[in-house]
Length: 249
Image (tube, rainbow, N blue to C red; front, side, top):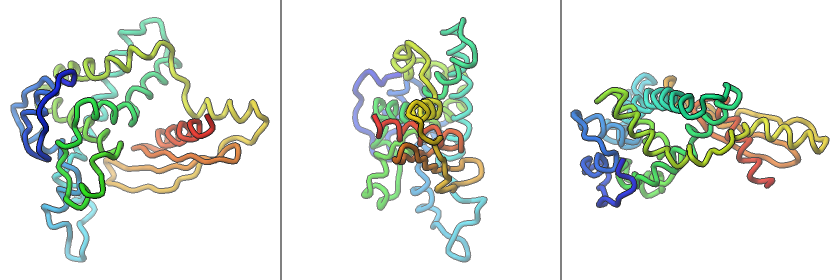
């Protein structure tokens, strides 16, 4: 991946060659890469955004955006990361490999990789969303990285996706000298050590299409609260626990 070298700025939704240079991969089907860089707001804007009653049918919401590629990219990343961890830590069992995996495929790591790749200006978003700063939203950037992985897999198979993962995630995996502790476990240990009630998790919001849902979870413990967002309830709870742990130091 060419994230190590500077490449000229990419016009939003424009020069895919610059993104390819950062990836170190040339797409045979550049339409896949363009789709991977298309936020649902841009797709919604181009489609007119409405059905007969002023709203798209549920089956069509997000059509033309990177949501479908994100769906498969998430699975590709999970597989390739699991494969790599098994190679790198041959003596570790699932109890240690699981937290490593969860950390390495988490939204903060994905967003950091997107920033390293300077994907911000490459994303195709609706004008009003661009003015609102959606290109800087961590979840949007993370989704784009997963969508790019999905596009690479569909275009060239697992091998180019594997090369990208092992290049882009190299620093993150090296930094894992020890398996990270699951945030929910760490938060539970924190409250128990202080004789306080167990953390309470509450679902704040569930939306998004069925193939790419979005969960927002709030957690309360020790008189303070945290919030997390992810594509599964379990991951959102973990993100909420991590947020609360940051708040309490």
